[in-house]
Length: 233
Image 1 (cartoon, one colour):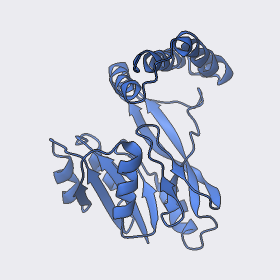
Image 2 (cartoon, helix red, strand yellow):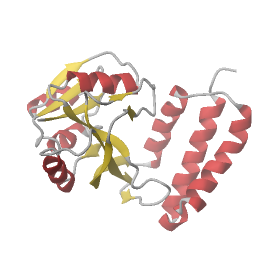
Image 3 (spheres, helix red, strand yellow):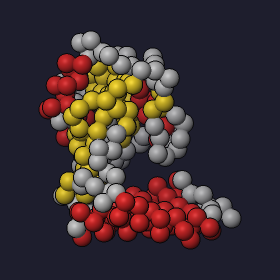
């Protein structure tokens, strides 16, 4: 028995496809933190169970969603992610006789309509499918992750992440994330952006993505700069 859990807030543009890609599971649980659009209505109409909670930060919010699931095995999906048919079939086959307690899942990131394979953005593994009795999310406000002292494995197929539809959306989201995770450090503000660009564009072969690779590397370097100049002085 498998539950897919999704945290949301004002995701009416994405939530339908996210739920559709999850309906093969035994239940789909939405934990919403105050949507003012039709997110909850759309999810309910598609058969998802919708719960609500104040915003706790990404780590705690996702862990609360996991705890609301009726089943021990959970797949944690974001509203802008999609479970592919190949990944679904692999999960259903794996759950018959699980070899591990938690599974890393690859993610294919799509930036403004283009799938990105370089800049360290693929396979972009993270633990997304796990037995909630053996693993849990940490309490990080942003850049959260699943932690466990258990047997971990890798699934072969990836999910799809509709990362950003435009450069404007990228800037808006990264501005928000850099504020949440701000750590004032003038030295890092000076050198880290340069290193971030060099690492993504040259070491991680971002130049093979053409102009898009340059733009993405540049934007991530700017995010790094924002993060280190916004914290308390």
